[in-house]
Amino acid sequence: MKRPVTFAVCGFGIRGMEAYSSYQKTHPDEMSIVAVADPDPARRAIAQKEYGVPAARCYETAEALLQQPRLADVLIVATQDRQHVEQAIPAMEKGYHLVLEKPISPSLRECIALREKAHETNRAVIVCHVLRYTQFYGTVKQLLAEGAIGRIEAIEAAENVAYWHYAHSYVRGNWRRTDAASPMILAKSCHDMDILRWLVGAPCKRVSSYGGLDWFKPENAPRGAAKRCLDGCKAKDSCPYDAEKIYLHNEKSGYGCGNREWPLTALCADPTPEKLYQALRTGAYGRCVYHCDNDVVDHQTVNMEFEGGATAVFTMSAFTGRCYRTLKIMGTMGEIEGNMDTNTLVLRRFGEPDRAIGLDPITDRFAGHGGGDAKMMKYVCSLFRDGEPEGEALTNVDASVGSHIMALAAEASRLAGGASIELDRFSEC
Image (cartoon, rainbow, N blue to C red):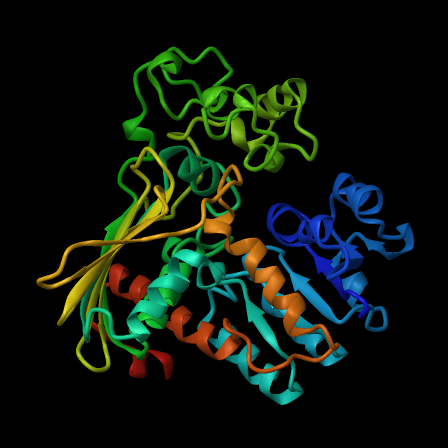
């Protein structure tokens, strides 16, 4: 029997631990976490207790971990957006292959530098565009490859972020400011840029984009709103963004409805009502959504033209009740329509009856990006089962940089009032 693939992890938090390292719990014969780096002592304690990582291999910083000799086959880099490249480049020089949380970086120069370093060191970099690994998008890709709807002419896609998810991550949370993280179209929707480019099967030529931060501003605060939700807010009963509702009572995210995972674990590592209330009284997640220091957009639309003539329109919106993606692909011989919330795909070939495409049920609470988190880790463990990668990764750095250029150009267009931007010229800037 072959040994499991060994992993070190920089950033043992929501993505590093809960999305990726957790694969070890169900597949210890495939994956073994041997070292972690995280500034939170509670996270390091979990690494020791639940993952069997020796205390001597639990580091406070990624830099401390990277000062050691190479400790594993693969390094998972799941720290904050602007830390990725400064940790990934020395890791490749040390000999690690990488699983790199998206986005690579909000800097185009850093994205290109990482790609060049990967080629120079001959290291595999799997960027966590986890949607490619889902049965939903994988089935769509197969149908397109089979010519089920002829040639693609147009696509409509939407990311419905959900009001509570947006409030958590992009108003109160770590991705609320572009200068500290990334623009919204990159931080959240580089998944979608990647998927659209992959499904079309051709590079994007030009983009234009509109959108902005419209609602989550002080001038829109309801009368009587307090700076913190638990500080006697007089608008609390009618406010859907009330922190107590989201973290204690919401049917998806609330502790009182059975949730013990994200987003609660962003407030405290081992959620209890007492710990959650303490976090809401003193921490960032208890602030009024109208009185935060956020600046990322709450809605944005991107128009795209691909080589070969296909066009796409993508919309990201905070203002939806549920968190899911929708897709409609229009071809010369038919169309495909999909909804990740209901986990359904319908193929309509012109002149023929509709055909529902059977998909396996998604059983986890938040669907792990449609099951993509676990499926990506299964793929990664298979890719490195002999220590070195067997073939090119599905979400390799070359493909990922292409979709990052799309997202960064879309943001540049938005800031320029919707100007059309040629990607070839933009990528040379």
